[in-house]
Image (cartoon, rainbow, N blue to C red; front, side):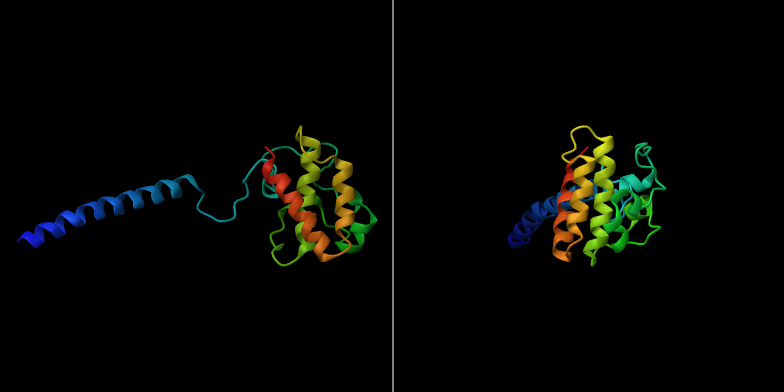
Length: 154
């Protein structure tokens, strides 16, 4: 009997702890969206810009092509008719550094026009994209830098 009371006294704090852990996980899950990839994360991400929740800057219409906005070097790397909206909406950038570069560069360019205090000017974004096209390593590095700036922006 004494051993049984010890066991029940020991299991009660464990149950309380288990309940508190479950409650914390449930509250966190409720605060997050149900999908790992959402189209409205952050006000400066490529996902936000392709969601069309905010009008694009007049200087860069959604139908603009990557080759016209970023120049002839971009024309050599990407489809001639790839629009900025399509570039921002791409989700196949996991294994292709150049896709990640054009995706993050598009968001960075839009942010340079639309967000005060964004760390890059439009001219810098265009120049850095062209410099990133020299190799996969350079593309990956520059895409990461733009991604960090896009994530930090609000």
